[in-house]
Image (cartoon, rainbow, N blue to C red):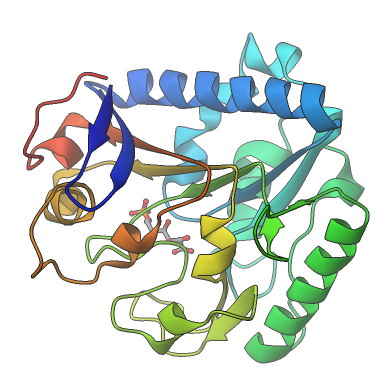
Length: 264
Ligand SMILES: O=C(O)[C@H](O)[C@@H](O)[C@H](O)[C@H](O)COP(=O)(O)O
């Protein structure tokens, strides 16, 4: 079921009763996008976030997905990453490696993580350079109406404050229009130093999925999705308005404050 907000289409909203059902729905969605992208351009360029997202992707490591997905065509990126050692418990790379990349036959050289031995600013610059190289080789497509990279899928979580990736409310990086990858050193969510995709990159994706669970996010989900009028706070999640398709994957608690009951 698609929901149209007053300002623009806020995407398709899928609500599932249990985390198990939500994980199955998410696995089906990702597997279908992977198949379509591999068929269309021979690769699937996917960007991950941190937090609970990877655990909610766990079904992909099980039958039938672990056998039906063409993992050799996957190229892995991060929509944001903490500037810590890759073996640190705070690392989104470690989270994905432990929860997904070590369980399915991803080609190691297709995994593009940050350089964890430099400053946040250098890590952001190097990451952007690496993505620029992969746009040249068409591993990552280019946007139809800018030189921005067009990822096949960007998977986002969302915080209770409406942040996505490492784009936090009222932070100056929300205004970054030229860089593809930027950095922060004052994250309100620890650890403080992170790199992050900027909004132009997120919004040039072919597909964006925001995966949100728990009643602590219900107010932010309402403010991000519903038509809350002109005084709506500028939530980063509401600034996710991709040229491609936007889908919200919610459990019942996270959807509990939405204006419209959803079973789509
Ligand atoms: O590196 C990060 O911290 C994440 O990318 C961040 O954007 C996360 O997705 C949200 O904070 C939601 O996290 P939870 O799903 O764990 O609440």
